[in-house]
Length: 328
Image 1 (spheres, rainbow, N blue to C red):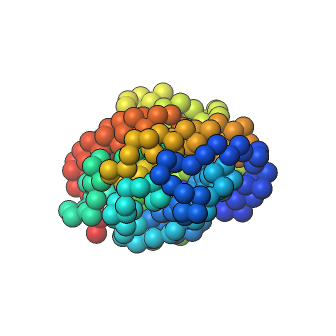
Image 2: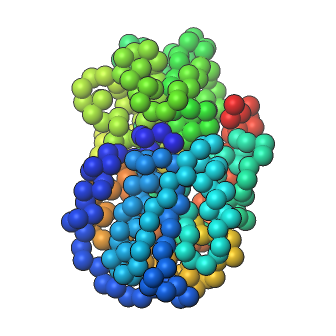
């Protein structure tokens, strides 16, 4: 999981000590105060799902006076940890905290050890993050129409980076290629660090980046931000248009993060978790901390996340098929 899915660990974890003192209002029915809640994260420490799990976990510990631990189980683009969570007992003691590769993997891999819609019960959409379309100044384009004109005049000459095959950044660019009918050459990296370094150095020409990563690079002149891939403008960069404003219709490639329980988890337990997570995400200090990092706290009923999973599964399956993408 590329580290760029979320900002600095120090920044996000530091805010936990400043969180509002929560009210302890009881546990999920059927759990004793001595039982440990496990938040399974199918990626390494310091990634977006890991940091969000630690924020939610600390709040749960304080509110329910119950032990909560975050277990990182990385590997196979999140498939290993996700499978472990799917196989856990549906008793409310184990939850999955993940990112939207959870849905994308179902189309990328021929065999996958879980089903995004039947192996889990959605609890809540935690947050979303804006992806920005950026270029290196060396290709001498200053707007999205310039980029498209360049790409059409010189098919395949523009190289774009991603943190790896099948990542949201990769699929976002492939969706853009299909929609705008242009040919760009994909250069996959083993994570974000090398990709961002080579982009800033001009070794690759374009990329989708989280807005919090793109802004300082743009301010220093290393890259240019052409557009954002969200439905609305990012308030951190309100002057940057959305791709929809520029004529790319039905284009929404936000990163999203969610919490889910193993299939069969009783509805009353799911509802209690949904209630407490919504309370946490509504706290002004939590929202402000996420906002500073280019993230928007979400929340809402479980059905909202279920609908997002169903919609994204169909959409990314089509992109993967049409662009002939494989995970290898």
